[in-house]
Image (cartoon, rainbow, N blue to C red; front, side, top):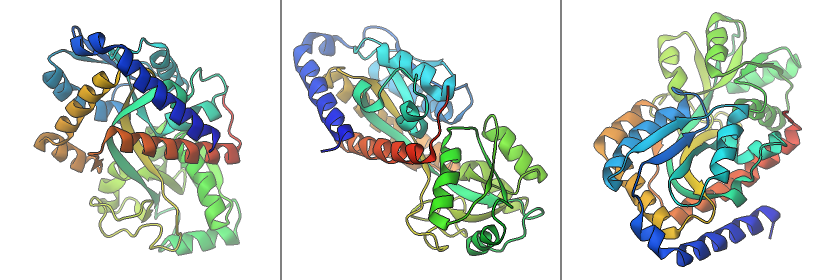
Amino acid sequence: MSGIARRSLLGGLLAAGAGAASPARADDWPTRAVSWIVPFPAGGGSDMFARPIAARVADAIGQSVVIDNRSGAGGTVGAAVAARAAPDGYTLLVGDTGLAYAPTVYPRAGFDFLRDFAPIAAFGRVPYALVINPARLDVANLEAFIEKAKQAPGGIDIGSAGLGTVTHLAIGLFEGRAGVKLTHVPYRGGAPMLQDLLAGQIGAAFVLVTAVAGYVRSGKLKALAVINRRRDALLPGVPTAHEAGLPDFRITTWFGLFAPARTPDAILDRIHAAVQQALGSDEVKRLWAEHGARVELESRADFASFIARETERWSRIAKAANVQME
């Protein structure tokens, strides 16, 4: 059994033990407002997915759910605060893919994602697409993109949302899978990266499908592949990376809710049920469809297994990329 698997199992046993030891607190919960720490600025992806769910969870539990945006250091500032919070169900964390491997990239992150958090429920998953500016980079498809990159190593500029981000690691993963060398251009966020892609300052980027679907439909950008196992409803005519000749290459950002480890199971179950109810509402389904997100309805155990796999996978990718942030 790997070290990650052992920590995951130990965390589950500790959480179960805490749940058995604190029935009174679990039965009384909640008696006051609940805080959801979003470790990124307002208006970002995590915030966008958290707020509609939080409003419906508040109705279900009969108490306010307050969104607390605490950004900094790739989300590790807010995550560290949540990790140190009391395991009583009143401080929760809205996490995403980047936090799963953050301790690998940020040596001073102050938390271990599997050890310090109990997964509660997934919010949704959104795939990326490899997109180009056709005015700057004239290639017909992914195969032609790879061939062009092989002919001129480093000749294609590809942007990322910043050092240590999912899009940064995706570039390294792509280079390894395709056997090419690109020129990485890091930005301070996805918005300025997309602006420069539209302006032709860079030739390519991995971007969430929801952010580029409109530009692709208008012809301002061209999507070469959706980096997922199946095509996306926002870009139905765009092949997956697998279909386009790059098997087993996928990049998906997921969002979900987490509690400090040792939070009683009875509380986690109540929150999970409230989130599932929110995800099943027609309004949330409509919003998620607009954002290109797949609605996730799964058990706590299934979500925990998914998180363990994703943490191991992305931590391995981060180590291979040798990315270290101060």
